[in-house]
Image (cartoon, rainbow, N blue to C red):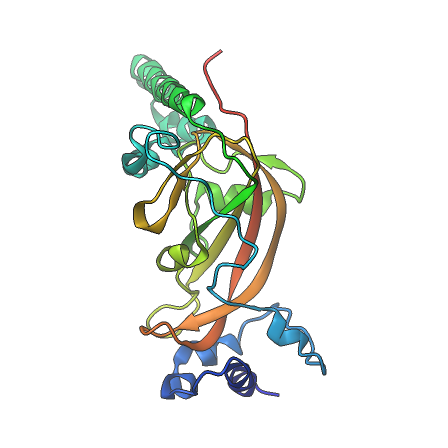
Amino acid sequence: MGIQKLAFNFMVERGGKLTKSLLCSKPQKAVTSIKGLELAKTTKDHTLFRKIETWDTPENHVYPYAKEGETVVKGHHNFHATNSSYNETLEQYLKEIECIKDTDPNFYKECIKHFNRRTENLYKRNIDFTKLKPQPKDCSAYRGTSRYIGEQRQDFDIINSANIGDTIVPTRGFAYASHYKFGTYQYMGSPYDCLGNIKFEPMLIEYKIPKGAQVSSNMEHGGEVVFPALSKFKLVSKETRLIEQLDRGGNAIGIYPYKHVILEYIPEIPLLT
């Protein structure tokens, strides 16, 4: 059974209408050329269809508690602007400045001091998280992200190289997430460029936030969460899944693969000792 016919059956089951874009879209053609993508065999109980994710937030989803004055740290909205300058390990930084280690040792030492000051600043900002009201229930949040295939990026590289059960620090900065799944849509994107070629690696991170955790949560952009800098997470699972491709009206017109990752937040706020 061809992928277009599968998509057609999928649309019929959901009560949707077959559109011209389903028959003609280039991403549909590209899906058939993906190597190594494990599709479940079609059975009478429609195993394949159950594996296709929707952008709807699951019915059993518990949203993070949010209330101004109780669950929001100062600077919540602005952390993302500084994340790029923080999202670098000392090892990466040392590689970048290796060329001046012998030629300008004094400047090299100043660079190390600068890196340490940035790290100290992260710890100081984390103090505000200790003053937040703890989450009253176990809850979840989502983050969509993407990169060019082959591009070096700390959070992707750390997650991709980790084993299930490992404790990891995906980012030194402040990780953002949405209260609801569709809030990540514009950030995750699809694997395809405008010509239908596979160029990107989309990833959807599902954060499991335990009761008692102190995270910054507000209702910006429909609901947003920010984790303390240098937060630790347990890698629960990572797998390739299929998700709906939507048109501009929000209607499902096809499917594409993405990496689904579940990270369990370890509620320990890193502070200066």
